[in-house]
Length: 50
Image 1 (cartoon, helix red, strand yellow):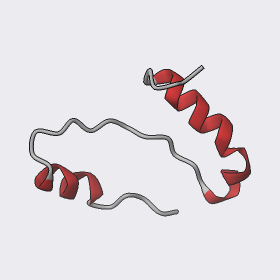
Image 2 (cartoon, rainbow, N blue to C red):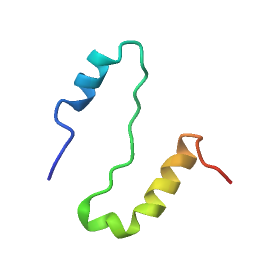
Image 3 (cartoon, rainbow, N blue to C red):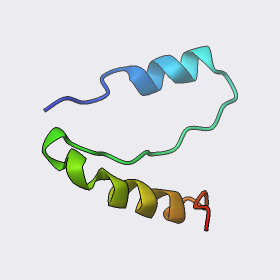
């Protein structure tokens, strides 16, 4: 299983003042169903386009 490692810390250090939030997690074996996960995530964070 792969994680983000130090990505969040690295981004926070290089993008001072930026706000970071959790993104959707799509694992390799679930990639065929990723459309649903992405759509649900965009609705949850208020970015969904009708």
